[in-house]
Image (cartoon, rainbow, N blue to C red):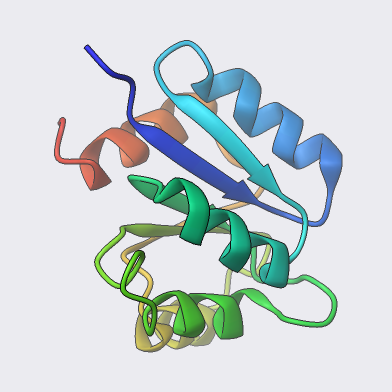
Length: 123
């Protein structure tokens, strides 16, 4: 069976590596370190799910998510926000930008894996 593809987008390499460590046994993992890089990679690999940080330089997660929603390859791809921003206003803003789910950093690895599976329709 082919593994589902997940794109992790975060400007902090240690977060990308941690998430990759949690997911790599069950999924094929791609990484991007900026919103603009995420748009290019998502267009090429057509991931089954995107894990997206909000606080990134140049193009933040809200902008990235909104742009992903305008592209044919990613308009229906589940987007899970993974952010240190825990305010309800940020969660609403993420949903308005097109996000499907929201996990707050620091996160529990079991919860992250469960949310990924839920958003992929496996749970």
